[in-house]
Image: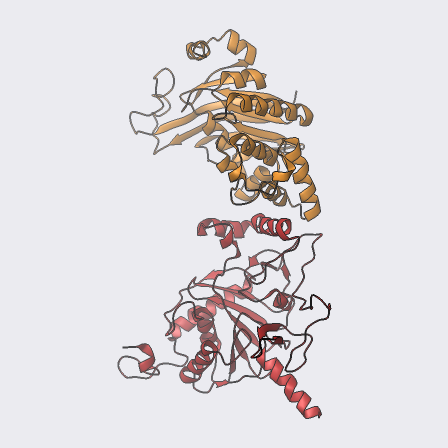
Length: 276
Length: 299
């Protein structure tokens, strides 16, 4: 299996930072706030590898650093240290060494993101079709007819009724907003997708349909995914491999079945046993 | 004391320098103009001066004109194509008052500097002429991005996808692009400018022109330029052609002509005459007058 994303000792510290920050935080200290300088260690020394066509879960409680990790990889945030290599079309991009224009080009054309809150991923002032068109236009598609056809096909694939394509997404239900967001993320045929708590806040039947949709699209397109969630059901349903984070550290990694059936770290055991 | 009362004199009773602005202000303006010409379409920030008219009444254009005028220049001021509107006439009087030696003119072909609001003259401008635009909103991205710092980064990256999204939304709603004025235009393959509220009809005149086009936004404190012989391409889709106003009659399909001079190639204003009938007339008054004179002479 070929890797698509290699993350090496990625660290993000919010605040001034001091030499002791990494030593006095973490699961063993039960905090991610440095007692010397008050900095918040959001992610510390996180390394992971994502293979082509693989779905990798990142699990952990609120504030464990799972979203921070993905935000850095999608250039929403800059890391304090560490690097990430994105293997794409025979090229290895050192993500944080690229200039801003190159980063945004990768972000617009070769990556996709689905946020928990659709207002982050979508522009509510333009129609659902317009949101898809924006991504296509960013990737230099300049034919109106082609854009229109692609947007229609994408929205049909994510089960958004074509009749509502020209409506503003702010008038859509939460589930439908999420489906428009998924269509937008998929629009450029990106090989790498980040899903940040995509089903949180949706009711159970809608959650199930969104998960089914993601699985189906993954099978058809073979896109690699990094799935951030605190929901064990989502992890079990979608992912083959999972990592568990706490206080910014990766405390356990392995096959999803293994982690859910036979958790090794005390925190993971607690997490698995606390599921309803 | 109102500045107009002391026109021509400063507070100590001494005379103002040539062209109202002090020499430092004019030097800064000229430097900004050079920079704007060197980077076609780029909005150059400058220190917009207080003018004796309110911001929004053409102070940006006025400062550019004052920095450009010399004693042997001839200047023309137009507002929506007409020379005799209150705004245009007063700005022309102001130039005559503060720039001794400068003569005002109503003729396009006789002017060396033309200050304009909302129109480009119908007559093709020559290499020795400069057209100065009064610009209310210099940034085309202001409709899609409220944050000025982000807009500057977007300009730097030529990240204009969201302007095309506006066109897309237009196409979806109306099956055509309905932008009537301030049509986003790409200059020299990179920066997209807001060509001030000129109608679509005038946008092609920016492309590969012989004259220099300067844009001044006084309130927003920006200067930008379309230098001579520079590409200026209105943005559109590959399969949707840019079109100017056609002035065709919906029923007969024939193009309306000016009721005064009979021109069929000019931008027309539509209005109701005293009998309530719809009539069309050249928006560019100087062009209309010139044609009438020629018709008279031919008789």
